[in-house]
Image 1 (tube, rainbow, N blue to C red):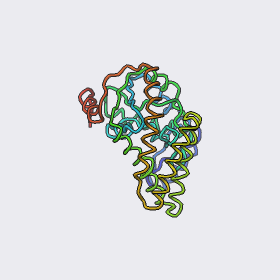
Image 2 (image 1 turned 45 degrees about the horizontal axis):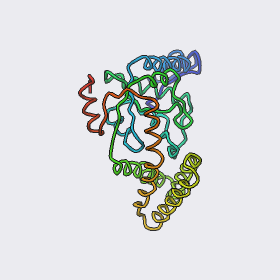
Image 3 (image 1 turned 180 degrees about the vertical axis):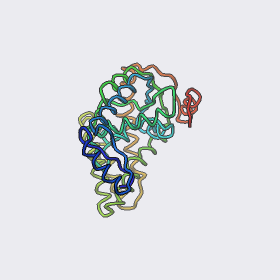
Image 4 (image 1 turned 90 degrees about the vertical axis):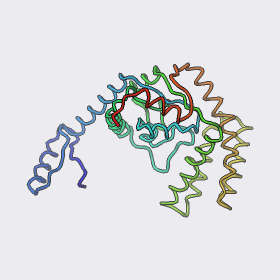
Length: 277
């Protein structure tokens, strides 16, 4: 492991001894002074400091491409760090990291973003829980009091984003490791996601959407054609996610600095932030 780092669970004496042994063999290997305890303390400090800095939320309806814009701007991708897309359909093929790892990775990401010297720390408008990982309390509190950018894209574009991220991309990733069972994995993930919100949807809408989903899956399995997925995705957005988004946005009354397409928000961002990249 030539790119590794030595550390102890606590004080750092054992890692110091190992570092000396390696040095005697001509191997220079870095070490965390104070061990994991010191590393953990430093990570929590970084997150607390970020919570006291100017934050800006990126809000927008489901499928508007918030994660893509954050990645384009090299800002904080909380969902990526938590390995979960933050919705009922957000489960990934691999498990979420432990809470401690999520927080440590978050601190590392904050340090990277800090190097850009932007006026704001931009991150997605998330709920407290991203899957089963929790946003640190102080950071989440600051997020609730921060202004926002509203990302607005046409329904057709949002449907294509969801089709790619939740169906095409998931199937491609699953096929790399388990080609024989990849479609079954995709089918189970989509059906489980819909089942998670069945009570909120109500019996009639859930039954309708489930029938459309099963029809789309059957066609995809038979011919490889994914076009029928657009039907249930469109209905799910217009009948469930969009009304819920509008209600929550109105209820919170977020101060909005700018709203528009991804291109418009990116232009605003680059015009209103000092950056070094």
